[in-house]
Image (cartoon, rainbow, N blue to C red; front, side, top):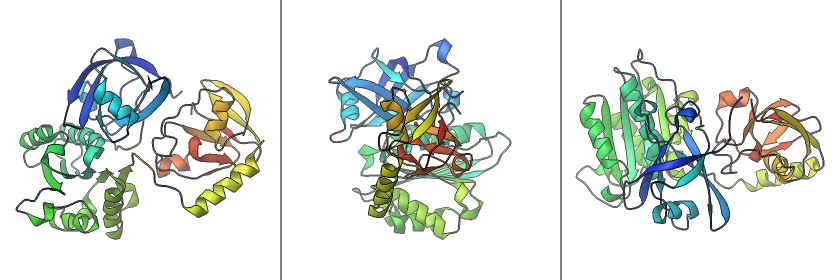
Length: 358
């Protein structure tokens, strides 16, 4: 059974990384140690109450599994309820509800492998990539990692010193290239954002034989991710080698929104079977998606972003057929295995059954 319950963890330390970013290290009691083991690139769902309102957010783990630390990094954003609360109020000794690690922005690392990895990161998108870099370099002694990292200026670079230390420690195995939009250096390529032109140039100049790269990792602002992914797709890089982690989802097209609205209307009143925490219940489809309908019926179905990004609400369809709008948080393999994001899914007829425990 996949456990998606929250547990209350104590904040062991709050570490300022930049003027806008802070890392939170959690103390994990011994009896929960196995539950909070994670794979490089995964994330945590955090929950707290701010001014009486429940707030949930997902943040990527920035440490490697072998580090022994459960740590996420939160970048403060304008109007961000949770991020501003962290910057203003959170301190060591406080407690936060934390869901066990999840996410598929990862690969299998093996000490016997000699691979080449490349990452495109922008801003706080460095957090899961940092976990992957640390894990790849420490786990696979013969592997190499190249990182293209975009920021406004040197002062906004999260993990600046840690990245420099990794470069010194793994000489010849870790290549680090900073791209700054608001500062100019001597090398023209590194001046500006990681847009499509710059991504193309970086690959052409700094990644010999890109078809030999075992995995490409992309995380950051939407336009940067789109640019990097397009640059790789045009080079015919195999889809399964391109790993993208999105923090936010774009608005659906008008056509897709209209299609989903029609499906929601047609599904109104249908009965679904929902399995959660070992129990199966019949619930009516009463809201815009399977997740909200399950929660309206009193089931504590897990969720965080409700935008098809985090995969916290993932469940397996065991009967019937559903239509899913966004699928950012799922891999092709998960979709082939029958998994859906219930916050994005609508039943397409009677007899639909979903299993959150699968």
